[in-house]
Length: 411
Image (cartoon, rainbow, N blue to C red; front, side, top):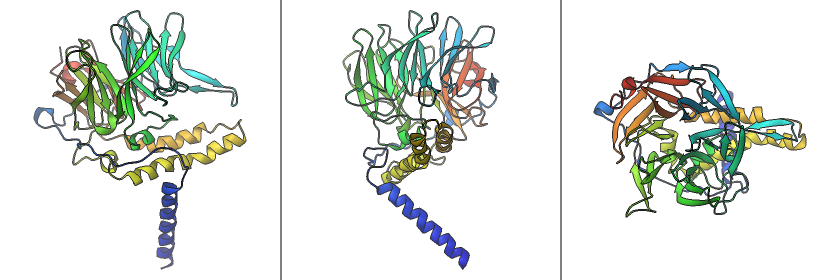
């Protein structure tokens, strides 16, 4: 009886603490939590159903790269963005070379804060553009190693709100289409709060001529991957939180309007890349359907639970951040990252996938990783006869023959 009483008392105290965290005024993050619904992810069937085509992926540079999120190709060489803030080049002779590192010196702690570059793309002049979660969008001259922060998301208010830059696509006229994952939110290392807040992402167009940003679409559910159509008649943006992709028309009778391009995807889309033809490749780091559910599917309607979880993250980190305020020499980053890492772990599924979609949003091919060799699969790029796979948490780059992974694309 004493044991049961102790357990019951503990449960009551935990429940009380969670209620206080949920309803105490003034706790971060600020903003409303409301119910939102979406079409639940649905499993693909037939030839598009779960397979093991990606299970035999080759691991490149294992242990030498962390979180190779996305890729870009320039003059026959592959570039990748890493969790460590580095942008690396895989040379033609398969060597790994760091070409740039995004970081900022903190005079208080006398340490450097690394960036987190995600989307990469080269323009026609050979400049490399990188979307960084912490800082914004960089334009990098790889010859001189100089970088210009053309969109500073820390200090720039776009329609009165800060932005979290995630991915980008560059049009032939130099305009940059980029995704803001969560307007008005200061990203500090974990995506969990972003995916639990109400949809507040944006698709934005940056004009290099005017230096101004124009919001094209608002209230997206964690705006993520961005890709332009081959003829640049439309641009796509992934809504990771809502398991769908939105299409914004740039030309034609529907120019300036947006619509759903693909929905009820069997997972939460990350990066979108052209497949070399008229279609696109979409990476799903977490496969989910009516049977293989995710907490994102369940919590859309339960906004108080989402509010409690998000605030719990900040409460757990608060002691370390407060100690840093008292003693600036103390670096809270390791403990804060430990808390972030624990909650980020819930964003990884046992199965990941790469979908091929045609220009109308129809899924025409699908490849799955059921082995766990590519946890957090975030990007799929076609380079010649190979499919390269990125991941926001793996310590290697994946590579597999294209004809094995996606026979409809295999050459």
